[in-house]
Figure 1 (cartoon, helix red, strand yellow):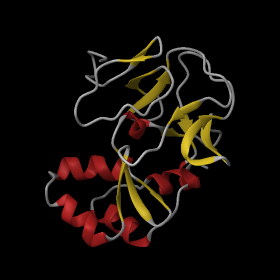
Figure 2 (cartoon, helix red, strand yellow; figure 1 turned 180 degrees about the vertical axis):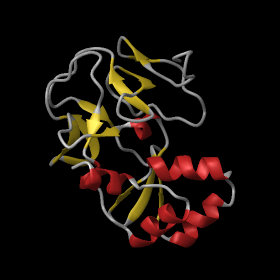
Figure 3 (cartoon, one colour; figure 1 turned 90 degrees about the vertical axis):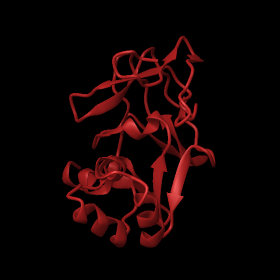
Figure 4 (cartoon, helix red, strand yellow; figure 1 turned 45 degrees about the vertical axis):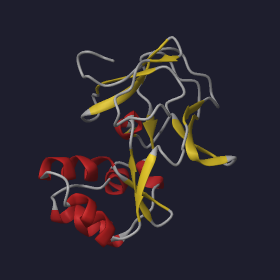
Length: 170
């Protein structure tokens, strides 16, 4: 654990113990820390070569919601603060709202990302170029899908969706 933020991190390629709410899907050495872009971010703790798998999608790494009713039923269990956190980190893909259940939710946006999808695995994240130790891992939020009902829920809670952030800063 990174004691200052109480979030899991990887040291020397070995996963440290993960809390029960997290899954060990990060495949490269990283840490979560304050980002100059916004909030928390993911930072490489060692050099990462182009093409390296960074985050591996699996059925237990993401929770999906296919309708506003399903999402609102989930929200009934959460505080307003937790709902806002959810909305600030979820993304839309293939008609569903996706909640990343591990540190992958801290990926920040860049119009010139150093991470993204590859044709052979469009669910996981890879290094698009060599990434230096200390560099923030960045994705292009504008590549995510738009779901009208999800955008309406974001507006209802005063949250800018990740897609909208990607479009604003692209």
